[in-house]
Length: 256
Image 1: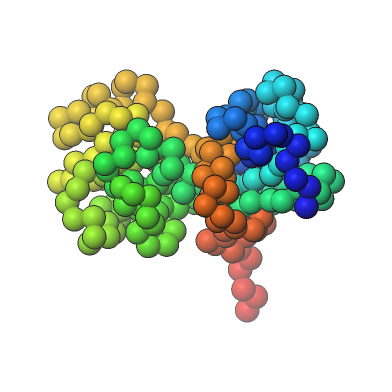
Image 2 (image 1 turned 90 degrees about the vertical axis):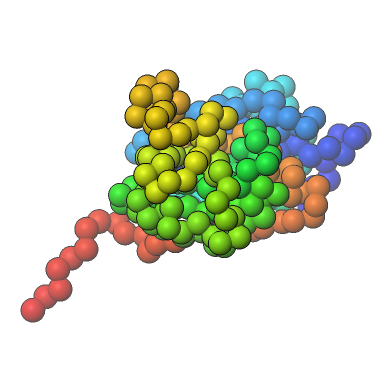
């Protein structure tokens, strides 16, 4: 594999993410996200990722020859989006003889939220586009509390791991506001990833009306977690995390 062409040997990471309704490409260098470009996911989205990568590298003033690693979100999320971003990452790896890293989108969300309030356990969410959410709990020290699972929003308060007890939970990702309502209804205190505490008398008026948008995973988050894993020698492959069988259309009725 190619070695980094930087005297300090700090990683320069080109990261791809397309598991949600947005495509993003980020460039991570000198211990920070130097640039990120985003676009709406649409038909033919595969053709958008390479121009986004070229634009992000130019904005960061980084040449392809300086890139040391390529990272991509593994999901969970859109089947098509995951295939597109992972294929783009693998293509860059092959074309430039670079190592690749696959990164869990929910773990990347949790890692980003840890900077905000490192004392709270975290519940990270991603929209399944089937009326449910993908979810995973993390302890305050970022240790996963069980595997990724799929559930309805209203079920989430019942699925809190016993190890987390009655602690306030930080909610991040698509559906976090709806999840906050479910937790409040179950008598649990939560905090949205914006850092604001949500209680029963705030959920309808304050949380809904203050413009606190659902936060989705993006390539900048993927790149930051990739750098964290690289520093610790944790390398995951560029393979998708599929929690459901891909469906290319509605189920056909069985013939009688």
